[in-house]
Length: 131
Image (cartoon, rainbow, N blue to C red; front, side, top):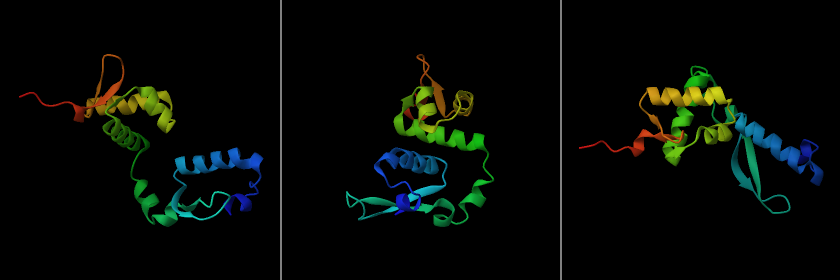
């Protein structure tokens, strides 16, 4: 229904529509909240506006700086994968390289990450304290 309302229901409009939905999700404007039996595959996501699904979250988020959010997300990412090059962080979040480096350096300064000899970054959760 959304594709039809946006006048993007033709096959040639699939890629632009998918990119638009991806951009809206990446920008935290919309999120999938369910699945409907619709379309050719009888499977389609139901989307909702983030601030309508999570009332008040936008107001709460205003207290968080971009740099704080980037540090937090970079730490969650490293904690989930163990270790990764900065290019993986940049590719995932699509942040400018200087912002990725600032977030990772701040994690190192705070004791949450370690830069490895090959330049990759690792979570300190992997490091066991020596007895």
